[in-house]
Length: 441
Ligand code: S3P
Image (cartoon, rainbow, N blue to C red; front, side, top):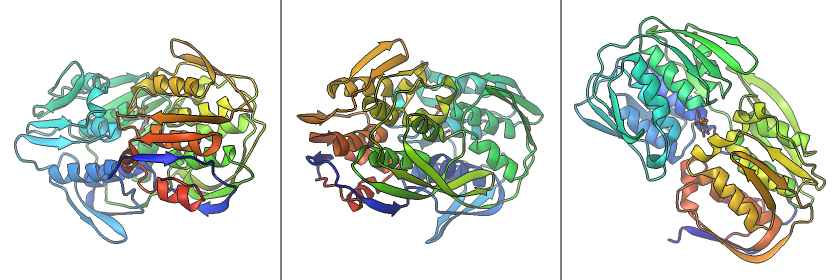
C-alpha cells in the first residue's frame, strides 16, 4: 500500500463535534508508573498507538504482566526495583523519545545488562541529556556519542543527586525523577518549567514529592524507594492531537468545531494562549479537574483576521510540539511574528525548525532566521495553486499532520509522503479529518 496521500481540494465548511486521540505523554507515564506500583492498575482510554504499544512491550520485557482488555489495560505492578529480567535483553523504543529517555531512568537500578534501541529517527536523537544525570546517580550506562544504542550494564546501587535541568525538557526531568524513585535518599531537581504530568501523577499517588514553584523553574524534592499502590486512571484527549483540528478549523472557511474532553493542563496548552493572542476564536467549556489535570471541551471557530505575535519565551516549552502549526497561523496573520530560542524544536522526531522554515518558504512566505530565532512575515491573502510534494523520510507524525492541515486550508495540489507516521501518536487522524468532509486520497 502506498504510504502517501493526495489532496487537491480545500476542506468545505463544517460544524461538528469530535474526540481526538488520548494523551500520549500521560499514556506512556501511566504504563510506566503502574508497572512499578504494587498490585493491579487499570488504565482506561489508553492511547492505542505504536509509541504506547512499544511502552507496553518494554514493560513486559521487564517482567511486568500486562493484559489488554476490551475496556482497560490491566497492569500487574511489581513495585519499585522489582523488575525481573533475563540477561542481555533488548528494548526497542521505536520512534518514541519519551519512552526511550524515561525508561532509562525507570531501569536505573536494573541489575542485568539491558540494551536500548530505536528506529531511524530516534537513533539520530540525543541521549547524552539523560546519560549525564544517570551517571551522576552512579548508573553504569554507555553509548557512542550520546546516541542509541544505549547500554545499561547492571547497577546494584545508586546515590541521590542534586540536579539542574535547564533545557525545559520534561523527558529529562521525568528520567531523573524515575531514577530518584529507585534510589534511597532525597534527590533534588531544579527544573526549568516543562510539562508536569509526572509530578501530578506522583502527587495523586501520594508519593512523597514536594514542589516549590519559582518563576521559570520548579524545585522538586523526591524521597526514593517509597512503594506506592496501584491505581485506576482514565486518560483524557491529547492537546497536541487536538491542535491539528484547532488550526484546521481556524484556517478553514465558516467552520466550527467542538473537541471534547481534552487535557488543557497549562504546562501543555501554550498553543491556546498563543493563538488567542493572535485573535483566534477559541473557548473552553465544561472545564473540570481530573487527578490534578485540567480537562475541558475546546470550542473553535474559523477566523480570518489573525494578528502577528511576539511569542513570549515562557510559552516555548508549553507549546513545543505545536510550533509548526502556530507557524502556519503566523503565515496567514497580518504583520511579522517573532519566535525566539527554538533550539529544542530541532531535537524532535525530525529537525522541525529547519523543516518548518523550508516548508513556509515553499509556500512563498518570507522567513528570516537568526540562529534559533525566527521572524515570519505573514500574508493574510495567502492562497496556493501550484503542485507540492512533501517528502518526509524521517518518520515525523507531526510534520505529516501539519502538512495535511496546510493542504486542506491554503490550497494547491499536494502529495504528502509518510502517511504511516501517524501510527505513532494519532492513528485515526485521517479518518476524523475525512469525517469533517476533507477529500483525501
Ligand atoms: C514529552 C516531552 C517533550 C515533547 C514530547 C513529549 C513528554 O519533549 O516534545 O513530544 O511526554 O515528556 P522534551 O522533554 O524533549 O521537550
